[in-house]
Length: 344
Ligand code: PLP
Ligand code: COI
Image (cartoon, rainbow, N blue to C red; front, side):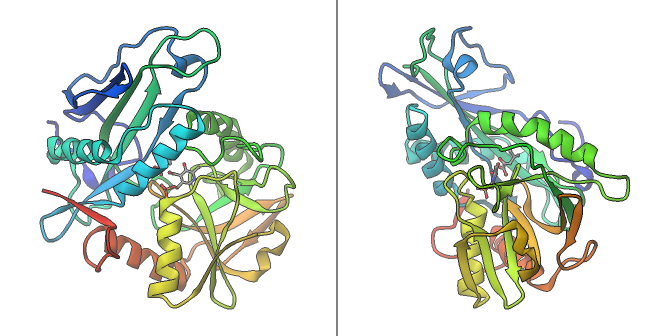
């Protein structure tokens, strides 16, 4: 294994030693297989290639100061993957299989779990694809479920530091009753061009980290960021995050709703976040497994840049939420029941 510069890792792929795989054939899941191959061999008529029968997940393993390795809420990822499977008619990996594969792939790649306080973590990418051949638009009868891992640094520049975002008014990432709520590749395909245009819309002084999408039905409410959910802290100290049928139900977002209410004593709401009412917010953030909490410095909309707390400084409530969330993930702060799975 070559030496890794943990402190300077980006959110990118790098080879690790093993991935784990399980095939669904003849109506049942097989045995877990361990592989060192980074490639997969699939039929050219596989439904994942033609009809988007593809789903993925994202979760992390944390090396903790007590020497243990913890994974954050993997049962929630299993449940979300199963929900996605029902949404696009794929075979559902059972929760026990999911958890067993998570633990196995983390154990096998122990050497790639970044040290505590390096700013990096081990990212797990579960992937489920329809491998059976079809030419008509129909679900496959065969599937491959696999998990690979890669050590990662911050998703947005600077990690826990403010980033500017921009509303791309000419693009939606999902349809009102479409697949936005599922973690399927097509939603991310739809976000690639707006993401590039968002980067081009910035200036050297204000480089937009990503696009923020409005609700596809009325284009009046904030939905989410291309790769994360959105939250705001109102001037009267409420935690508000968009309620929508077309956004990804973020596990980090639900964790923050709980933390805001139970640990910080705030009112925590899933509700409407109107784009013309940003003045109600004292702070704002993007949240997700990859994003963790990335403070939103400001949002550009119709040529105007709205600053929340500060374009460069992190607000106090965002900081408290971050400390509590990452404290739980790294085992420094007591976790709510069932949130942590130790890998021993
Ligand atoms: N929204 C989108 C579009 C995402 O890709 C992600 C990342 O998984 C999230 C939100 C955050 O979800 P989670 O907190 O479960 O990682
Ligand atoms: C995650 O946070 O796990 C994501 O899936 C976001 C992005 C890397 C697609």
